[in-house]
Length: 429
Ligand code: 5CA
Ligand code: ZN
Image 1 (cartoon, rainbow, N blue to C red):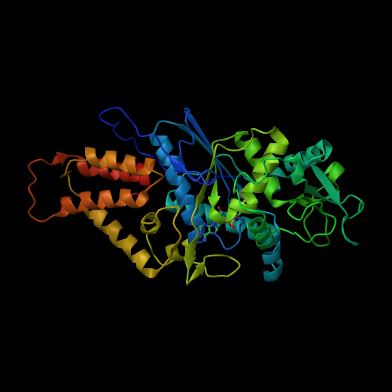
Image 2 (image 1 turned 135 degrees about the vertical axis):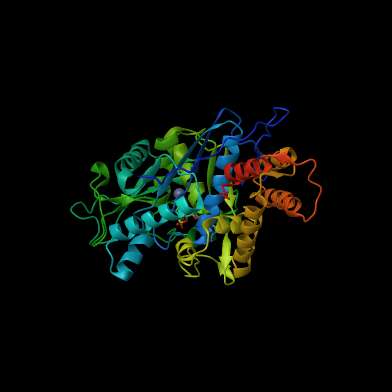
């Protein structure tokens, strides 16, 4: 898909001692901090949107978290490749299109366009490659056919009326017993897996499956649903988890460094897509680390399309809110915490932006070397944006202190701060 324009990331002075901190992030699987990209390159796959009700603050918070990682890695001198998808054909999208009487393609295209605008406004570095499921159905179907041939997948008979001209070719499911490492991403117990699978789009009670958790790989044609011709699979469309496994494989290769998304994707989505990756590319295909952002709530509940308690980035923009204030409002929370969007959170972002802009408006200012080191250290320590914001606040406070001693001011300091805040935090002052 055509991505959005990349923000310019300003160059920053190198650390005086030449040492750049190693960027460590929290790995969901081990529960510890890891250097997820120890080499000169960093490759990450972050699950993209299902394009309806986009872009709400929860989506934005997740993409801003991974944008910080991208920027921290870039500053550490790594060559970063960030791959993502768009789930532009899936049950909830089709259900929404039917409910509102829209063509599902138009719904997906318009919401993807809005997402691009929101991400551009928020200064998020775009994914490249960025692949829609619709444009990748062929390779996904081939992967499912390979799994059938390898015996890691099986067919399940469909109900009368399904399956078009070849009703005998059933839906296709992954056989989880073929993957001894299944469960290693979330490390959830059986009861938790069963509960979350049923809650998050799974079909544990589907007749004909070998195991209730086995996930759908290929859904045969159903009346009124979009469908693609796919050789031995018969007409149909891909299941959710396999799309991300194949788009990641084809976009950045397996294994890669970090698999990311919101915490609601740990199970079943990432567990399943990593399992599919192993079935397709061997036992060492799992990502080096799994990073998950905490879920944002609003009006007392997780912000979610199904509940409808949404604050849209585009609505805030339409109200005249500066996207940089939205960015600061989000970054005031550590990406792994769960927090609630309120008017006060936004107001704090607006006030902070104003304060910082005032502080960088002069020519000279307090010394910046320590601040730059602190910003780098904060981000390297599991993307601690709140710590970074506090450090900039302190510099801005000093800079704006009435009657302070300016003898040791550095010329150009405000410019360096503005560039650092832009490069590392994505906040344009
Ligand atoms: N298309 C799939 C992933 S392949 C999907 O989950 N789409 S989504 O539109 O529902 O979500 C897009 C991203 O936003 C996902 O990473 C999801 O985990 C994250 N997300 C959704 N709701 C929230 C929330 N309330 N807080 C934080 N992140 C959220
Ligand atoms: Zn995904």
